Image (cartoon, rainbow, N blue to C red; front, side, top):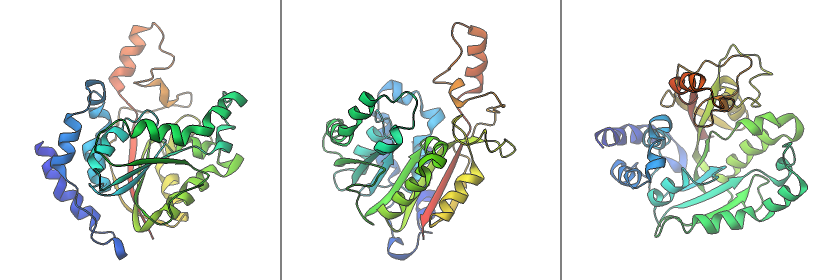
Length: 286
């Protein structure tokens, strides 16, 4: 709790740098965020040391009453924090891959792709039942159909960018994601990125997202080319013990532990590393 209260002043200073009509954003409410985090189930709280949701949301300047979009919300780990924290005056929009992009995955059968056609309605209906009295929830896909135009305060990409970049050459999906975020945001609105971080010395072909990792410099360059400026980078979610080599994928680490099987020694080694090294970047729409 003391850490969260101290973070509130830092978050206010960070958000104050946003100019234009967004120059006086709502203040981060550390007490409200602490209350929401303490109410999460034990399995969610077990990830706090690796995911740092308190510090991460404060760094991005996310506050009650904001309109926030979350890329690839999935089962709602962050959504279940955001919905009660944003409150009834706020709004949460979940965004999934575009229908075309699902076709790029080798596992995506025609039946699977067809099952995704109703994702927006199904996910928003489910999410609206997660929290009583929280922020209203809606959903769309990255093709942008039905997206709010210039109305959002923040768009969050939390461990969500690698596949966009992985398939960029096939369909321009990373460009599509950055452009949609720009279109949805108010002038001065914020993009928050948390992403598995590749060493800058790694070959570009290895760090294209197919292993889960991206170079921080490449992510910054992509958003800057898309009409954003970098406000600040943070080491909130850094893990210097994660030093991937040429044959490593991010899913070798917890919680996935791919390839471990029954090898307890290997499991112990990877658990000792912990979750991936992650960049944390805050951008502002120019």
